[in-house]
Each structure stands twice: as structure tokens, then as C-alpha cells.
Image (cartoon, rainbow, N blue to C red):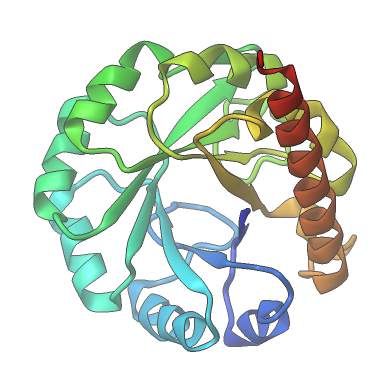
Length: 234
């Protein structure tokens, strides 16, 4: 299972997570007023440090300008861009054209029991989306690292329309892994993305908490997959 920790701001955090079962780190750029937002000049060195430590750097952004995104990718060398915000399929297609060799992950915003982009999944597929990430919207409409628990039935209802890999995010902890068995058993489930769940009370990243989350979700996924296989006829 692919495991990403988001909101990385320093090379010391990269070193802290390396070798702890973490596969990727999220680096914020173009997230106005975001607590982990970095200037572009800091993103490149941090992305290179992550790559050298065996962690995939993921650019997490609200930007939807194809030229600015292309410049950011060219300047930092990140292989993957995670697109937050309510961009249209047409805008995603323009970003795809500007970044032909970059993996594009479109965030699907879950507000209450609704996946807001659910009607547009086919259009996003045609626009060139490589993968999706389900993330919860906060009560005040805030998006990205809200810590608000993701609604399992809302995600499950969208799964029949997905034919791309997908990641779960939104208030994920070691304690709520079993609630997402339907998604975990799905053939296109790729992994999880955490932020607040991997931080201690002071807001610092905790390898122990990250390890607990990894173990709990790996276990829940294994159980869900086994149950799915046992339920198949024959």
C-alpha cells in the first residue's frame, strides 16, 4: 500500500520519515495562507532531498494555471502534482497538455456524504487524470489537511465510476482504518495520505504515529481483500 505524509517543510522531516514505511511526501506550493506553504525556491531542494532518501516528492497545490504549474515542475523536478481546488475538466486538460510527462492526481472533495466532483469523473478521465485522491472538506468549506474524517459511504458510492488508481485522505488515523473496508478491497485502491494523524499534540511529525497508521491500514486492507476474495462465487 502506497503511503504518503503531507505537509513536509524541512529536510529534517524527510530524514525523520525515511525508512519508516513512508513512500511519498507532500510538499505544498501555491496554497495561499496554508500552514505548510513554501516558496518555490524551497520546493526544489526539498524535493531533491526526498528523492535522495527514497521518498517520492509530490507537489500539492491549488494552482490551476498551466504555465505556472509547468514552470514549477521544470524548476523542481517533481514527478507528481496533486491538484486541489474545484478546477474544471477543461482546465485539467490544459494542465495535462502543459505537463505531458507528469503524473496528475485530481483531488475529489467529499463534503458530508457527497463527492462533489462525482458527476465529472468521466470527463476528468478523458482530460488525462492519472489518479484520484478523496479528501474531506471541513465544516467551514476549507479544503486540504482539514483533519475532518472522510465519509466511507460517500467514497463507496463513487467507486463504481472509477477506473483509475485512488488514494484516501481526510482525518485518517490508525483507529479508523476498518471503517473503509469497501474502498480498501477495491481493485483500484492505491494507498492513503495523512497529515494531522501523523503529528503529535504540538503539531510535529511523529514516526511512531506514522508507523501505527501504516500498520493499521495494511492490516485492514489485507482483511478486506481476503473477505472480498472469500465472497466471490466459486
